[in-house]
Image (cartoon, rainbow, N blue to C red; front, top):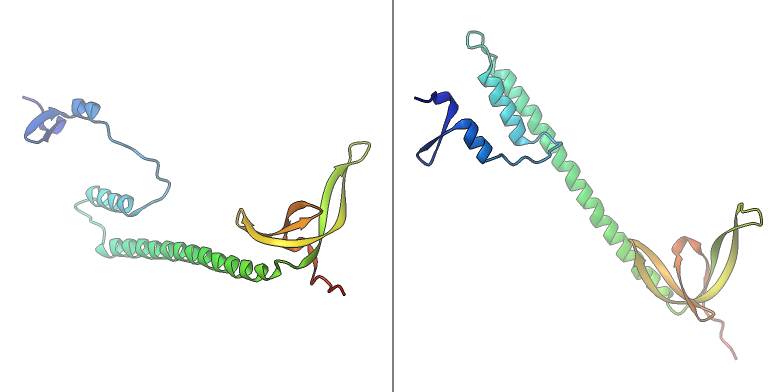
Length: 172
């Protein structure tokens, strides 16, 4: 007769535990966080392995559970604040795009930074001021930019590079 400690019964059929585990491997996933299930498993293991003649006081288990609950609530608050920060950033970007769209049709001067190399191959940076007309506003990788038409070319310009915004002087 098989040892009952080395068998497993599934659906009324008894299997050898080692053979069953080999035929039905457990799915494991990487989990770097200590979640609720892991905490409860630790608690149950702790209860199973305590000395029955000298059991641990229940108040220590309650204290551990309270600490874990507090940690979980703090984690939830952090997640909520991160989500709120994303919403605020989206609102800020929308407002900024609305404000920048009032620049469409106006003339702007902006500073264009050019990174080059000198004759010896050393990096040099030079700046030039360009002038054009704002034709649109766009968002590139989350950053709002001004679309400017200058000398038949379209340029996407960072907001911080704009030096001057002005109306086209009226001609008589």
